[in-house]
Length: 374
Image (tube, rainbow, N blue to C red; front, side, top):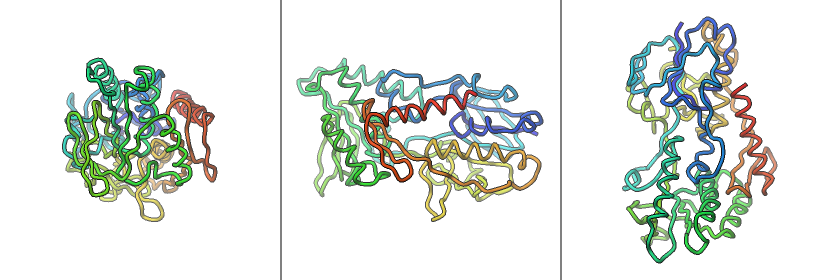
C-alpha cells in the first residue's frame, strides 16, 4: 500500500508523527517536498525583518525512519499519481499539505513591485533586498517602508520591521507605514484589544492608514482610495500581506475543484467532491466549514490539528474502515507579536497584553519544535 504525502508543513508533519507503528510498518510512505527543511511559517515575518533566531529544522531530524523523503517540485496531482519535476509517484492514499501562496486580489503591480512572505527562501530574499534598498537609498527624505495589509501577518511584520529598522537607521531616517482597507487592524481580536496594538504601534511611530482601498502598487509608491479620494503613499520598499490562497498546484490540477486554490473538505478531510477515494487535503489547501457554515481561516494551529487527527485515524482508513470520529477543531487562543517587546492575545475568555505575552508565544513555538522532533 502506497501512501504519498505532499509538503512538509505543519499539517503534513503532524500527520506523519501521529501515524501508528502498524501503519508505518505496513505502508510504503513517501514524503515529497521542494526543500529538505521544515520552516516555521508563523515566523516568516521575523526572517524578512532579519531578527535573529532558529527558523528551520532538517526533515531528517523529524520524519519517522520508515518514511522515504524525495526532494522534488510537485507539478500536478492526478488520479492515482502525482507528477513531479523529477518523476511520477503512484499512490493508493494521498495527503495533500502543500501550503499557501500570496493572494493579490487582482491589484495591479503586486507581483512586480511588492515582496510577499510565502516560504523561508522568499522571506530571506526579501530581507536581503531590504538591506540593499537601504544601502542604495540616496534621497534626502526618510526611507519609506510600506506594509500592505493590517491583518495578523501584516501587523506582526510591521512590529518586527520596526525593531529592525531602528537598528539599521536612526528614527528620523525611516518611515514605516501600514495600509489597511478595513477601518481597523487585527479584526480577529475584540476592538478594545486591537486598540492596544494600535496604541503601541503609534507610540513607536508607525503610521496606520486605515479605510484605504489599495488601487495599485508601483515601483516607488502605492495608490489608494481613502474617503473617496485617490492618494499616493511613497514606498521605497513594499511588502504585501493582504491575504493568502492555496498552493498553485491545486489550482492547476483539474483533478480538484477549488476556489482560490483551496479544496472544500468534509468532516473527514476528504474533498467533498470525491469522498472515499483515499485522497485527503489538510492545512492551507483545505477549506473546512465550522458549525455555522463559515470557512475557518487558515492557521498553523488548524493545520496541526488536521494532521494529528488524520494520522490517528489512518489505521482505520487504511483498513478500509470508517474513521472513528469526524474532525473537530479546538481553538487554543491566538497571540500576535508586535515586535520583540510587546504582544497581544486572546486565550479562551482572557485577553492578554504586554512583554510577557511575547515570552508565552516563544514558549508555544518551542513546544512545537520539541514535539515535532520527539
